[in-house]
Image 1 (cartoon, one colour):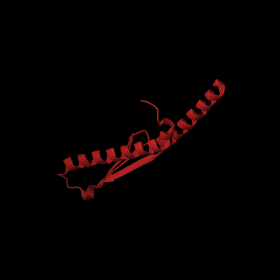
Image 2 (cartoon, rainbow, N blue to C red):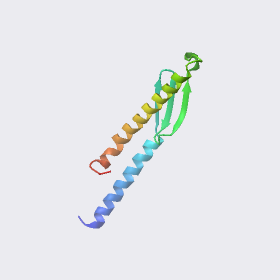
Image 3 (cartoon, helix red, strand yellow):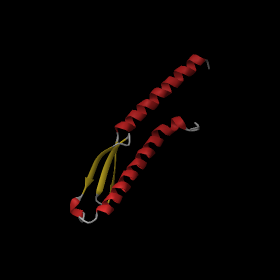
Image 4 (cartoon, one colour):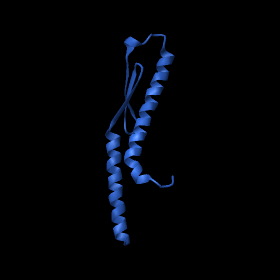
Length: 96
């Protein structure tokens, strides 16, 4: 294979990778932990936090903080899983 063909193949692969990364970035991921619901985009930016106040005792602020943390971390894991599913085929075997 000549260098020109390899370069074109690498450019095509890069375009595919960028397209799939853009798709992931545009997706919405969400998780619920008890009465806390969070939504994030594929860039791992928190876009929404919803709290079911009717289920929450006013004195349970510390528990609320813990639930938000659990919901956010679970959502990040979902983003990572989707990213690995789509992007892993491009990065398998590459050293980081």
